[in-house]
Figure 1 (cartoon, rainbow, N blue to C red):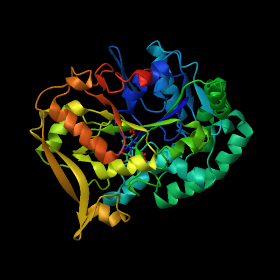
Figure 2 (cartoon, rainbow, N blue to C red):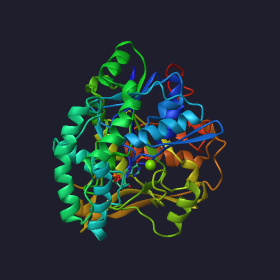
Figure 3 (spheres, helix red, strand yellow):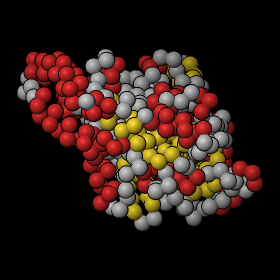
Figure 4 (tube, helix red, strand yellow):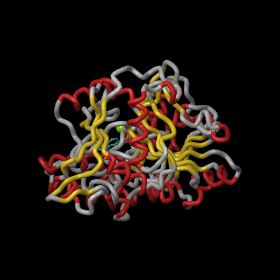
Length: 434
Ligand code: IMO
Ligand code: MG
């Protein structure tokens, strides 16, 4: 059962970094399949904290081959900076494999991301301004520049000159900015090429070789289902497909290569950036979640919007991803509440919606229907088995599981890897599983 996908089921920041860390021992290869350095994965290994944006968390473990797949967009300056930073901390990035088919984030992508956000004003998306959207847009428009182009300076120059003609018109005529000179980019990017060359490879072949040899391959998602370009809260989404289906296109494997699909789900809900969020709590409850959950973005440092668990969202994600299980994170954050609410449906114009509404307007104006249950009011960071959890916490987890329709197999009760309740631990044949 070697292919495992790890996906976020909400708006990102569900704690995917911690889950990768917990699974790392059993993995041989960890593959990023979409997104770019808009991600922020915090991994705590012993006394050290790592914040990774572009590299798969698998890079932290010497026995793992870390792979950046074709579906990722790569900002080479960030890539090399992240590799250098790891090297400086004694972690070798030598094993890193980078797909030659992945698209490059270029300086004009970053600039256009910033300028479009500014132009949109009140209508802005709240992007991470890393150039993600403009890079994927060029890929779809077939004017993108790929990693493999770095290895052929003639082709790279030709493609760059063609695309710069258009970008410079946009920059100068629409935004009143200075044009970007091809020479400046050429010098910068061809310099990166030298450093990246030994890592660039046919990652699809390597992933298949690993799967064929029965090795464990983890496909590490970035962002989350509700940020998916096709299934999220469009246009307040990212420009790639974080859903499990994105593993196929982004890593180059068919659906049968994926044996388990683990949804990472926060015990409440958060979102960074703009866009609808029915259970958002702007009062003291939301503030308490920010404080106890340290809800500040790992990439942009922005304070995350917080609110109660939205079962409509998670049930939708369970379906879209064909989840086989859920890893529930940050349950300990809820220990401070007297009463805990769960959104089980939405009301809009006299109708109740128990599944994700078909029209965005309904989602925008949805009034959550809440169930409320008493909290447990005691810290749970020491819990390691199901029996260690207070009855009220157990009931909460069981309720979420029923609403999501997917077994919750593990529960995180603190940031450290050890602060985890493994419900499978007691069940003999599955205990080898993470
Ligand atoms: P991880 O992997 C949370 C959000 C941005 C913005 C929208 C579009 O840490 O879960 P983009 O720069 O991608 O064009 O921005 O998507 N966003 C994330 N929010 N976690 C992330 O990644 C995110 N990556 C992008 O805040 O609302
Ligand atoms: Mg994040």
